[in-house]
Image (cartoon, rainbow, N blue to C red):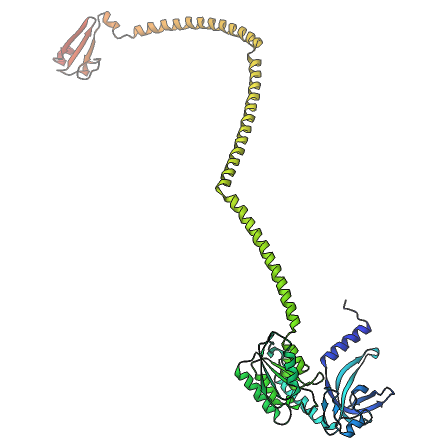
Length: 473
């Protein structure tokens, strides 16, 4: 949900915006609805046929008819300066009438009780000066279209500059005010004055040439245009295109301090910084020395705190490094190794004791089991079993011996029957062929000339096969 404003808040916001956007304006129109209450203030409207603007002309801003007619020195309501009679172009509060074509100079204001915007007039002049105002607006529009007023091209002013070029009249009050203020501010600087006319037909050319020279010298950190207050005609040199061009092409930042608070010139729009008065220009360039002293004190305290914090930080870092060095020292390393060894030794001792108790407990369990398995009662039962088994073993062994003896006898008989030398006892012989080493079983197994080994009971007989045929017979 958007922010909801009260009527007062909205009116105040409009007032601040409007007054900031139009600090000083010239308005041309026809007087209507003129009113002169007993207070001496003058109220009227300006109209051009299509729109209407309320005007309030307070008594303090009005010039008296006597001062206009007498030709005496008078106070300019815009500048506060004493100026000479200049043809009575300014109107008095009593001299203005309905239907007159006038130029009003002043500032816009919002009358909050009625929510009405109005112009607070500082000066009311007849239409004769209107041509300058028209020319002012035409040049302002032309230069705006060319980008002379663009904020992104404007340069930042140096802080507490040491070299300042001032373009102004050497004999004017403006330079005296500027130097007086400059002498009381900042940390000291060098000021060069580039003299120039600041009023009249030759002034624009001289102002532009002086600014070009200051820029070409490449010495100053900032250039300042200053002039005291005056009428629109008096300040017209600063509303010319040559001066605007010189400010625009300057490589050094340019400050415009022309006239007084209500005065606005083309130079103000083109300059990198516009200030209200020449004195204000000095105030803008250099800070108050009391402010500088306070900044020095602040910096001193800040530096003290920073140094203290730095010492604390370094002390903490040193303590950290000291602890790290102690931790990394050989002595500390040996201590850690010893601590680790003692810890492992304690763990080993604990593990050994645990293992001993575990083994003792397990041995106790085995002893119990052995006791149950081989105790007196168990041994008595086992003895009876052993005796029974021994008896059975003895009987089995006897039967096995008898059986094996019988088998042995049978084998011995069979073996005796298979003894090859047994037939020798009965008169037989064994004939071995020497050539082959085999026993002779078939006459075909020999050939004439074969040697024979004949074995009989009591020895051996050697023989030679003479004739196989004869032998066969």
